[in-house]
Length: 355
Image (cartoon, rainbow, N blue to C red):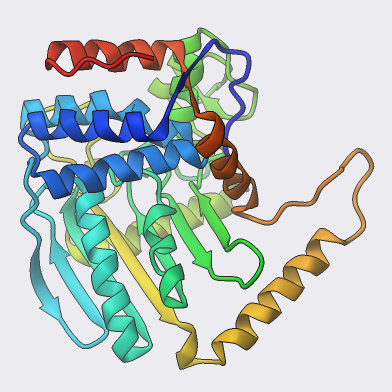
């Protein structure tokens, strides 16, 4: 769910303005136009959905990795193994968003023929907000799933050594008259990007988010980023994040565990890995009947008895759906510091942007 950063100063930007700017910056860095447009669209879509931690905030980091050689500006996606329902792809250190977009297209195409598909990718990079790719399946009357590993942030239960990423995953399920149900989550209590936002604002993080490098609870965002993020549900979150790494990095013989490199490393390729699934509704049930059941289930959930002080019960993905409608009309609020970083990046590259 989107993070509330209402206490920080904001600068408003139009989604089309940000889309054009990101595309132009990426093209200036050698990214082909179509691939630049895909990457820009995933970033701006994250902002529209209120997932600001994975939106245009990331553009300067991607620019640094492209300049430093950690990420290739052109995507050379090759097929290592393939069956009717599966594929193993190698991203050759290209842009994670483009690799993932194309991998999900393959998953959808295979599910159309086989009913269910699984496409795994090795040697990729940070792919942004996970929801973008499973949601591609919705227009094809399919359920979409995505998994990715990430640079180490979490320790095993009982340990203090960072061995796992927060390894996000997402499931998107189509509905009828209701918005789709979309669960997009990391396996830490909070994503590292949210801690970075508070760090930029000079604000403390809440208790229960992280430990410092000595394994002690901390509310200092800088100490948290140097230390360990806490897993959701204790040992259960640890178990889930491990399984996601097994389904991605270990399965594809790419980097896994502490070997996955972070966005702050400009020279070394990340070696990240992803997996994508598509499930065709028609392979299991009547599509219209399924969507009617989903709608009825959502109605039941939202009309159920509320706890004291609660006004609305949301289903996963609903707050983001409402945020898109709001921001398409009113604009995207950017932190003043993020807007300044984008302005500096644009100025350095001869692509001015005004907010």
